[in-house]
Length: 275
Image 1 (spheres, rainbow, N blue to C red):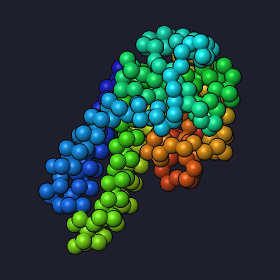
Image 2: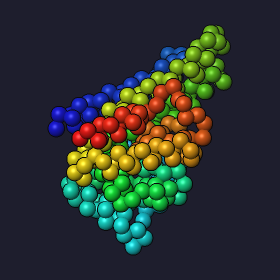
Image 3: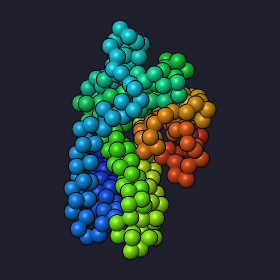
């Protein structure tokens, strides 16, 4: 219960911080008169992300919901683990992506979605798959998926707004350093926010998954396989959505990022094996 209260507090603080970034960028682009429109835009982005971020994430991955007869093993596993976790049955989706990965989305447990890629489905055995599904269900139970999907949408918008500040100038016509600094600092700030929300929540989801299935070994084994494969096979998703996945995806740009949204995989594995 204490973790849930702290989680909700962090979620509220981070959403307020994202709106604050919108206001700062609006001020840099057009001065004080742009602060109120930026505030309204930031609020609208949070509302839209709340209701539609799951659809955006699934569309980006070209993921489709499946019925039980299409993959009985996967479907039954999700159903059994959801019951054990005392969660409503989430939608089960499969993405055709070759890169092995998985994520959860949806604004609350009643609208939860668990998505795995075809690459993951073909790579893992059933015990390892159970570890991954338990991890994603833990995100749903802790309501991590709401802030993860909202941050994915809003952080991407912040990056685009910083580009507008750079290319269209606004107040920067009087001070050319303003839009340049905004282009550098706004995506950096969004990256710090993504990093802050992701790392602690990944550790907690790993811990909860191990408790749910009774061992940390299956998830540790799957993380080792997924991390190695993710470094080789590119997953074509926006950088702002990388925090949603179970392991840091190679997005086709640069794996050696300044700010990684996930803790080191070896540290996650060590913690799981020590449970």
